[in-house]
Structures are given as structure tokens and as C-alpha cells.
Length: 248
Image (cartoon, rainbow, N blue to C red; front, side, top):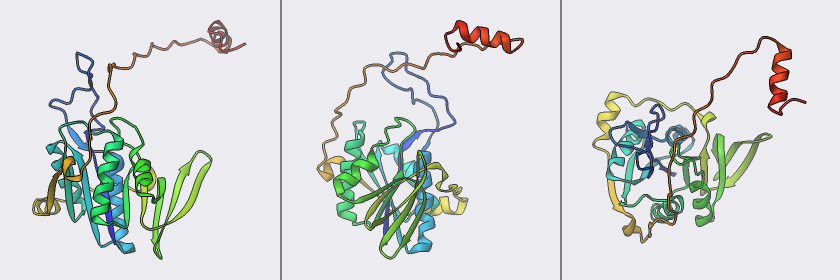
């Protein structure tokens, strides 16, 4: 059984983003980059699924050549090989989904597992678009994944609690935070990852046009919150809230 795991190189979640002076985007110069946390969970889950019959894990990344570092991390965690699709343009979710569909058509995976969203743009679109393009069943926001008898059972987090769905393979699963705790890659595995296969392709190799459909007009930092105030008692609190039109 083969599993395809798309991963994305993003600004490290511990780094505070800085907006460029001209407002054209986030400044990524000389800042730490890492694997998208939700994708890291997806890689970990794929590795754990080896106990349920998974025999090969293929990591995929779409973006600039430096995404090789992210793929090497996935390989060090336990992926068997990797594919890097480079692009000079920033690839939007639909473009990513089209490229992943082309890779899926070529690789014939039984399961594609990826993070529910990337922390840089928070679109939460790629998994759903990919399922639509492939015509496969999808389990989003997964907190538990079980493969059995040619089907995958996904426990997913919804507003009202938990929902359990079963899909025939092949299928798409997107991961949520509570699915697992990703492992740290050991030094020996990091060294071994350097010799694992990493194929390099371009979007053109898959016949996908990644010309942006959206235009960013301006990026600004969120406004700073005003300092809070202290009140002496409940009566003063009610008076302040009434003045703000919150309490009647």
C-alpha cells in the first residue's frame, strides 16, 4: 500500500511574521523556515500506518528549490522517497491540487494524507480540491485514522463533537492537531535521509499552468490592541460596560 504525503515549506511557527515595508507580502529574508505543522502530523501518521499495511511513503513538495530541506526532514522522519516540483511562481491551492492530481495519476497511491491547512495562508482548500479533481472520498480534520479491509475509517472533529466516516480506498485524509504528536528525526536518520531518492520536476512536466489567478493588493499587520483597564468593583464594571453599550 502506497501513501502520498504533500508537505509545504512555511515560516516557522515560532517566528513572528514581519510585513515588507512596501506592503507586498511577508518578509521571508533571513528567517527560519520549517515544515508546515499540520503536514508534519500527516508524515507522522503515514509512518504509523505502516503497522496497518502501508509499505511505501512518498513525500511531495511544491515550491522553490529550498523546499528540498523540508523533504529531507520528511525523509529523516521515515518517508521512503520524495518528489520536489519547483515553480518560479507562487502556486495557489488550485494549482497545487492539479499538480498533486497529476502525481497521483502517475504514482497510483492508495491514500493521500496531508495537513488540513498551511499556517502561512490558512486557506484549507487543497485537500478538498484534490478530492474533487480525483473523485475520491475525503475525510477532513482527522483526529483518528484506521485502515482495514480496503477502506479507511476517519474520526473527524466537527462543531458538535466527533464524526466517524468510512471511505473506500483510494481516499484523501487531511489532518488536525490532535491526530498525533510528530517524532523528532534522529541524527542517524537525518544522515540516511541524504541518500534517499529525491526526484525533481517542474509544473510544466505535469502539464499544469500555475499562473496566479489572484492578486495581492496590500498586506498590513493587524492593529495593536489597546491596553486594558482595572476597575475597583462590579458596579464600576457595569458602569463602564453600559457606557460602551455592552451592558444594559
